[in-house]
Image 1 (cartoon, rainbow, N blue to C red):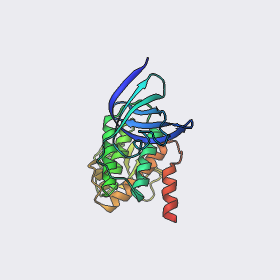
Image 2: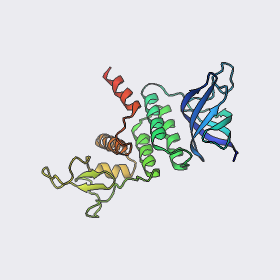
Image 3: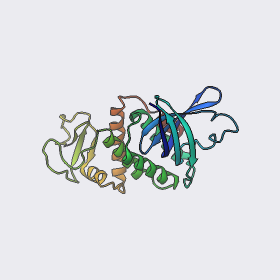
Image 4: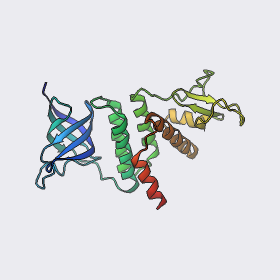
Amino acid sequence: MSKRVDGQAAYVLHLHPYSETSLVVDVFTRDHGRVPLLARGARRPRSAMRGMLMSFQPLELGWFGGGEVKTLAKAEWLGGMPLLGGRCLLLGYYLNELLLKLLPREDAHGALFDAYAAALSSLAAGSDDAPELRRFEKTLLKELGYGLTLETDVESGRPVVPDREYAYLIERGPVEKLGAGDTATGAAPALCGKTLLDMAADDYADPRTRIESRQLMRQLIAHHMGGKPLQSRRVFIELQEL
């Protein structure tokens, strides 16, 4: 059954050439989640949509159709977002790649859309990227059903203590480490209790919290991606080496 959608807030995640004149546009929308749209004629030099379909810019879209790939009918740039550049541009591609690889199509997540928009706004303003990136990653995992336990030891049931060391068991949560010889937690990510509590409060002012939270989220995301590498992370590492 054909369906028409109008006035939908959206961001472009990826563009795929389709025929000599058209594009398939993967977009992330507030009310419809990730949707593939066919932009007919968008590759033509005089196409009105050609300059509209930019990543990291707020758009208002309209589309129609009942198949897996809908047809883009309208694209309007909402403005107000500076272009990303340098490190921030790579981090923006990292956010897009996570959504493309982890988020099912046509699965709406309003909270995740807001977290994505907030992360882009933070990057565009040139502010510190750690808080918004970690918030986005946490929200992404929560919306996918993999929410983090951060304030309770999952084995003892006791509250996490700031000055104690914990191992984070993937798909379970933190367990206090009993000492250097503790082998029960194996290769689980290790971090201090304060880092866990800071993450629960979205407080990334402490340098150790920033380092350990990044390492933890990297391991959790890698696990939920089934070990598949992130192209954006590989490019980022190669540029740092250069």
